Length: 264
Image (cartoon, rainbow, N blue to C red):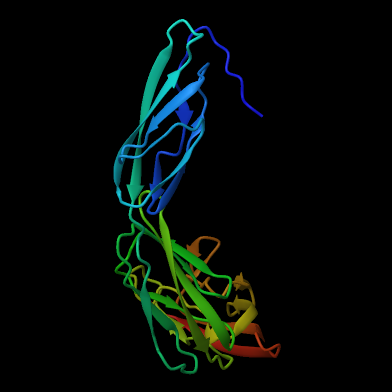
């Protein structure tokens, strides 16, 4: 089926993305008004007379694409337009990790060695991801359960070009939990929070009480610690008791009771 283009004046127009990644297959959608013949110059020495062509760019660079539309039945006979396309190199995704040999209850540290990228997405294989613009920061990740995980790093450049690198790691997790027995919530940035420490923790319910049995803190989030405050007020220096109920990733449950000393 041939497309009919009717207009008093021919007007050359086309649409195509402004950038791509080498090797880039550019698709040109001809939106010209009128026009019976079309002459394309892709800016790299190649041409076409198709109405809506595609063209492969195998080298990086900025290419000015020109379209000349001709229609002898129109008043102005011919019209031209142009648009620049930026063809970019793909980045190279790469990373290393430690420990190479799995160790019990040991976080993995991933080191980014990618080139040509400005944004990075870490996919740890356990449902967790991290997007960061920082390349030089080593990424530490703790797995909740023993298993083999496919870790991938997707590197992006400013033009949206991507590359992906993956490694398989094996984690050995022995369920364990502990709670520090003292902390100093004085705002100096050191030991200001008391948190649950452990490996293989799937769920928790942590309650802290003062000497009169008033619950001053409760959480089900292992990342959330107590800052020594209750209803916004810093609590006095004394001993607090807690009850911690844990469900580990292997399905076992555990209750731990103890005390925490708030120090100034």
